[in-house]
Amino acid sequence: MKKYKIAIIHNIISPYRTPLFEELANHPSIDLFVYYCAETHREREWHILKSDKYSYNILPSLTLKFSGIISHINPSIIPKLIREKYSAIIIGGYTDFTTQAAFIISKLMKTRIILWSGSTTGEPSLLRKLSSPLAKFIARHSDACIAYGTKAGEYLVSLGVPQEGIFYAYNTVDTEFFQRENSNYKPKKKELKDRLNIKNGKVVLYVGQLIEKKGVRYLIQAFAQLKQEIDDVSLVIAGDGRLRNELISLCGTLQLPDVHFIGFIQQQQLPLYYSIADVLVLPSTEEVWGLVLNEAMSCGLPVIATDKVGASIDLIRNGVNGYVVAEGAPDQLYQALKKVLPATESMGMESQKIIEDRFTIAHAVDGFVSAINYALNRKAKRSPNRE
Image 1 (cartoon, one colour):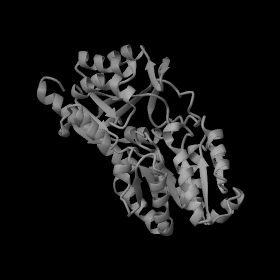
Image 2 (cartoon, one colour; image 1 turned 45 degrees about the horizontal axis):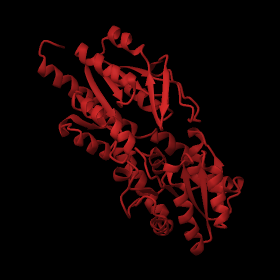
Image 3 (cartoon, one colour; image 1 turned 90 degrees about the vertical axis):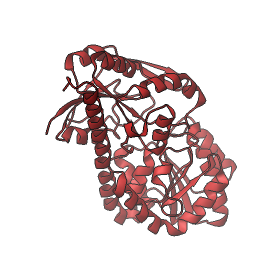
Image 4 (cartoon, helix red, strand yellow; image 1 turned 120 degrees about the horizontal axis):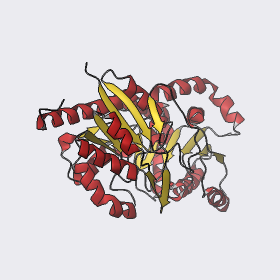
């Protein structure tokens, strides 16, 4: 089997991406190198998970941040791409100077270029207005596109990318890790709940940042309605952010007991919290994907998310493994919780089936390999003198 020299340009080292890159590097047709624009971002609290199972380089960088938009400037990427002569370059998005430069260099060198995109129409209007013309140009002139999921694919089509040029590497996590760790913790569920001082039978879980777009206030309001009917239930909020004190104050105003703010939890420890939960809720008003849904479903939990969560259309089947509700609608969250809590075991089993059928790292690798093969063959047909 021929081996292709592939470069990926990614923003930062993320614990969610490391397993994917390790598996890609292990594929017999891929010689992988990853260029990171920065080691991490200031607001990210996770431990940096470095690996010796794939080759990578953290580029010297200047990082700019304006109105929530982060852009990296890494001029050293230019000579590296020129020198290494990759078969194909995969760029993660189009808002960074670095990915833009890589796109231009690829075109000048007639190297295959693949856009890996999670963007959807549900992102903020400022970002959309600023990036839309550039996104359209890069997407249309890429040799293939890799989409996070259905909503990302729909956005690529709206930019003018033909359906045949879009490949799906559904956004995911190391599902085997979460399944394995969850099975280890499950038998200790009562002991773990006692340790966390959770006295009630049912546990509703939120995992994520405590910032405006996550919609946590709506979950708290929904939980307040739920507590009026079902007393034997707790809400666990795992995460931190600038709204923490405001959300704690909201719980006080609503005279709401049994809400546990436990702070930021590293990814390696998250299975413990999934093991004590009965349902995960992601009430975001804006979310490109929502990897906590993959994590929770891998651990056998039903899930509830809003229609603004990119993953909701792919991961959630209404009434089967959870519910999709409107953004900013506490009453719909409350109604969904009422339906899920009596059926958490059966719905949780369906969640695991959905993950195993389509959303593992192996499935994502297949999507990448298909896109690479398409881009290489498509280019070869256009230029028969090239390899």
